[in-house]
Image (spheres, rainbow, N blue to C red):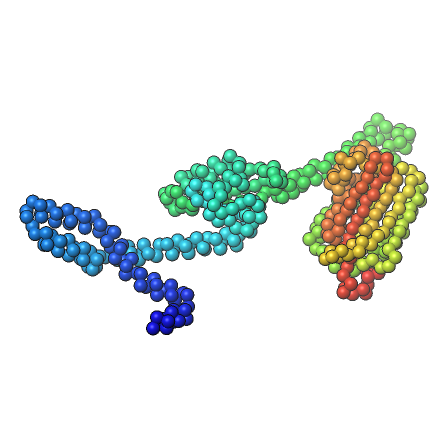
Length: 455
């Protein structure tokens, strides 16, 4: 029989066994709860019966029967308050577990880092973004192990008694520099105190960086336009006033005015070009382009400029079609900007050459095409290299303006390559020239070749 009972027990589902066990234990829990609730009454009755035995000579048997009868009445007779309180007391742990589980699911669904703390500041739960933000964050550890800013720790320590949410902003320098906003909210209702604490984090670094870039861009653009406008205005006022009838002044001022107007035109064209590139930055190009066609077109458009500057200009090509996914006009613009920079800032009569190289695939990484624009000009000091692709950044401001530079050419190159998922590598040393290399991913062989030559 015992073997059959064990077999039946094994055949029952685990959840059914749990329910049976809970049903069996429920009466015992109810008896224990009733006895606990009436413990002081039972003690009082026992004391009274003992007093009657000692003082009034009551029989011990009757006293014992009285105490047992009272205990039986506590256990068996219905008590409305206990009947209502008992199910709530039994259901409270399950409800608390369900609430905690729902909170964890909600926190996991949020895209921002969320951390749940107990009143002492120890971590009870953290979602995946929070673990990604803080590699050392662990459940059970104190929040000060990952965030040590005094303002934040003060907000956490005061949250249980404050009763309302507060937001603090703090900056971190390690492991990377960033600015964060932390909302610290106690999970209490009304005047309750001492509950758990919810911490919601938002990374403000990117937004503040973009705002700063926008402000710098507007300031730089207005400054770049203000200088030629001031020159034009001064020349015009001079020609309208003291030099009104001075033909020599007109001959001297008009070419300068034309150059300043051309400078503003170049700047506005560059700003419009940069705006168009940024507007399409999120749309990856879909056309198939042969980089040999891009090299040929760039050479044809740049040859007249090369002849004017007396440079030697050599253009290499790939030995076979070099197919990438891209925008043909934008890739031509990249090469034009790089070659124009080499001609503009290089030594007169120098050499500019373009080298083309295919980098075979390695493992899971696909093949790449590298196009290098190499000059033998004065070169660039190492401290300037990381900032060359910033808007309006120039190594020599006066020389750049004199040669017609806008400070936007390499910024446009960077944004075009970002759209094409390409890279720009810059190598240069003073007195040894510069090399600007663009790298683009090779289109997969399974893609159709039709139209590749024309893009």
